[in-house]
Amino acid sequence: MNTVTFKGAPLHLVGQVPAVGQKAPDFALVANDLSPRSLKDYAGKVLVLLCVPSLDTPVCDMEVRRFNSEAAQLSDKVQILAVSCDLPFAQARWCGAAGVAAVQSLSDYKEAQFGKDYGVLIQELRLLTRAIFVLDADGNVAYSQIVPEVSSEPDYDAALAAVKALV
Image (cartoon, rainbow, N blue to C red; front, side, top):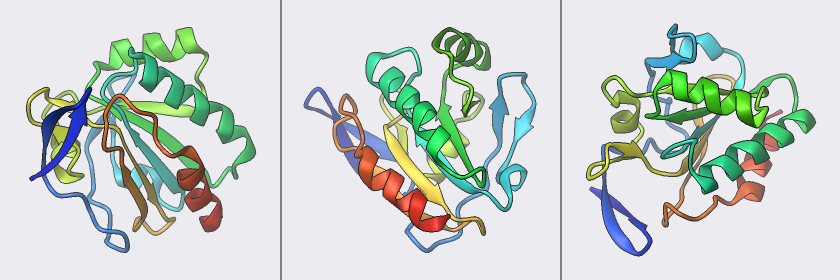
């Protein structure tokens, strides 16, 4: 089992992070309108999966806003998804209040299966740890970043470079 820290305290991650080059695990997430979303809904797109503990926290807020503004400089062949265990209603409220339209928020609240399949579910909190996965247009993992300290921001430049290398 992998570990991360939150304000220095160790937390355990459930599942195995998919390796770069591996086919990305399919997922069953819930959109803000309660409709289902899976990997096939984004077929042919370079997919950026922003895994965050909760959109309603300062670091998650900064991260998703940053990617929302970066989206304007990316190809229309790129789709950015913010995945958390927040309820879809809370995600919709946050996106509306934050003016986030270029990043789609999806919820793993039902069974946290995405978290398990991507190795990012925090066992102690039943929240997702901070991580970024970039999938190529064929659905393969091209880049992954698990942020070691949950309260820290990710390496934006490395993730964006991975995205730009694919388009």
